[in-house]
Amino acid sequence: MKASLPVLLLALGICLTAPASAQLAGAPVPVRVFSHADTVRALHQLFRRGRSWGIGITGLAPVAAGVAAYSYPRMDLGFDVWGSGRTSSNGYATAWLLGAPAALTLSVVGPISWAGNSKRAEQDALVAFERHQPVSRRLQRRLHNQLSQAFYKPRVAAP
Image (cartoon, rainbow, N blue to C red):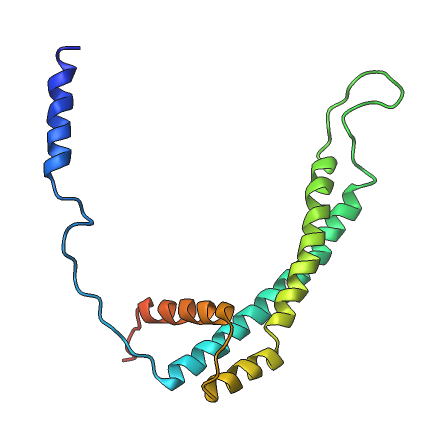
């Protein structure tokens, strides 16, 4: 106990006197003003990514439904109906218990994402942007994230 007290006090003194990394001055972050073309390009990429995400999720729904449909008649619930004792589960119950909710979730989320990022929604957002009309908060947040990712992505100059 006597030897650990000085070590503890020394460690506490170092922690209190050493500057934390958040307190150190870093390099200034350059402010970039995005042009009209940057914003339009980001809107196109945003909606295209949302459509492809919705199509992919919708395409995975039948796979999950197939897993659930295949495993349902084959699952063993871990007990014998005739009373001869417990048996070990064969894994089909887990596949069904995971596949059925996944199929339901994917079949709902996929089309919603697909429809929310449709060509018409993209055109409506572009028209609102061109007319300097306000867009939804959700679209503002997604556009901000898209532009900040484009800004921080390192660009390599073509030789």
